[in-house]
Structures are given as structure tokens and as C-alpha cells.
Image (cartoon, rainbow, N blue to C red; front, side, top):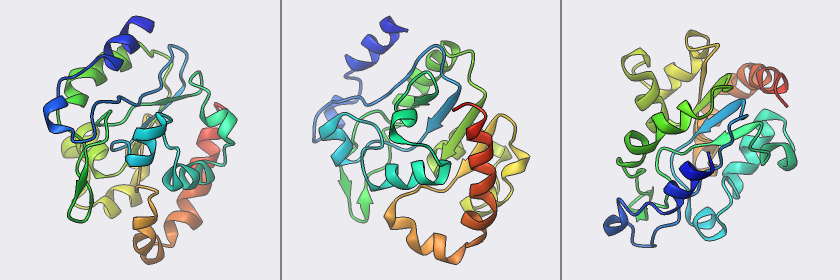
Length: 189
């Protein structure tokens, strides 16, 4: 695992596309039980090097009902974004995760973590990659039908403050699905 992490930290595959430079942000351990597969680090996380060290992370921990101490324990939570480096800013938010990361690293990472019991697929990029043709037409329908993907995977919307409108339009998520998420996560924390 240490060798794999060292390789990831030295990765420069998409350096030419990263205006803010290379800084892979990932947290894995051979004993990890839950994997969080998100999009890519934002600028704040890029600077700190700490995964989910922003408002999105605060909301995600709230949804899961876990304290930061538990969240940052890699023996419980592996944090494996679709893109490991900050992709830069686009017209309406951050650019999509670089497409090179997941095919290059994810299989090796998950092969090294045989104790993973639950994979949280946060946002469309993770759901498209991991659920492929099994996902529904929209993120909303995929998340609403989360039980189709259990016990291995659970699709979630991105916890970004940019998704406040989605959350207001879909109150069932926090009323009905978040308690189920908390119950699943509590088995391993």
C-alpha cells in the first residue's frame, strides 16, 4: 500500500492540463471499510492536501453522522476521487475531474483494499464510471433508486453548497435516504 501511495503522489500524467499544478489528494489503507468516491479536490483541498476539507466535506460528514476524527481514519474511510488533483476553474464551477486518474489508479487501489464493504458514489462522474449502464437516466433517479445498488454501492448527490437547490427540490433525500446512509456507515465506524 505504501508503494502504491508513493506512486500516486509522484504521478504527473495530466500535469500539462493542471493550471494549479499537481497535488494528488487520496487517502487509502488496506483495512479501509468504506470508500468515498467523489469528483476531484476543490481549490481549498488542493491547497491543504486534506480530502473533503471544505464545506462539502462538512455536509458529507453531517450526512453520514461521523466526526472528523472518524472520517479521517483511513482504516475506516478510503477517499478515492475520480480525479486526484484540482482540475481548475470552469465557467460554472470547477472543471470535471481529469479522465486519466480513475482508469489509471482505481483498479489497483481497490485491489489493495479487500475489506471495502461499501462504496459511496458521490456525484454523476463516480456514478457514471462505477454504475455504467445500471445507473438511471438522471442523478436524481439514480439516488432515489439507491437500493438497486446496495449492498456494495450507494449513490449520493454531491454535498456541495452549489447543490442547495437540488436538496430543496428533493427533500426526500435528507428525510428518507440520509438516515439509511447513517445506519450503513455506523456499522463500520
